[in-house]
Image (cartoon, rainbow, N blue to C red; front, side):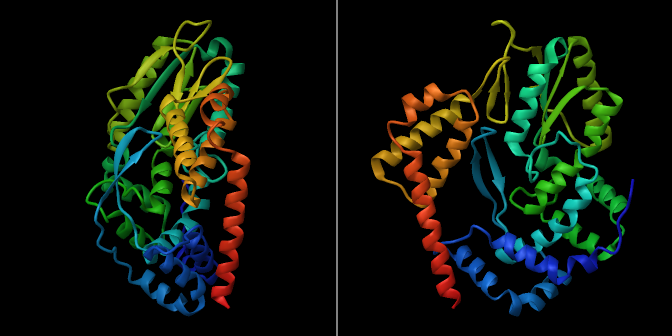
Length: 361
């Protein structure tokens, strides 16, 4: 494994600082306190530079009160930590350094929270495999990790980071960010999605290179493996579980499944990332379609604002890339016009940008 040193100089460089400020304050607008803080940091980045470098050098986590949210795609409650704006800038500075390092070893079909990939990229890959896999795409092993973010052991994570990063100052900063919780990776920190993806990279290569899985795709800790033999998939499941326990200190969730994939009405579809995959078409998970129709009716009844407008346009992205045109015509189109929503969002953005410029002047 290649190791990296002399990272601190790059971390505190002007280029990295200004890039982090831009990314951390992007899309934060409005009258809320955090939005005002983001605007202040963006507008006074030059004057605040020395202050942020000092903060990074003597970094300590702020006190955080956990917040509960509902993850609609995963259909589960999650406890998150909301970082301060100052912390977000530091997290982006760290992530800017980690991203090219982690990407060099990242499995090509790991898609969760990775720029340029994402759920729609995973969808295209899985559809391509389904169309071309034939008999080799007959059975499905579907599995995920039990309470993944909350259960990553710090000792193993730090050992792996220390093998990769040979810059003591940068490593100490990373350890402080990780140690905001006694155990696990904090959901809500920008650094967490990179660390969580990278932590499973060794598992990815083990599945592909040692277990010889031809069709294997991962979205964060959700994994799908396809193969021609049910017994072989069961064997892979046992090996993966053993690897997770012994090498990564993690546990496989008990609801893992091995089943026959849909073929001429026999078998089941693949429910993955909010999509439902069949041999000849892909639809949306019913719960997501229901949320889209409810949001459309709410906009029809109460009117729209920028938040609901962007939510509805996001649902359009889901509807547009799946075979759900009939449902769209029946349940969504009578209530909202996506053309009108796009115009609304465009006018709002122009007005907002103009206001930002006037404020700076």
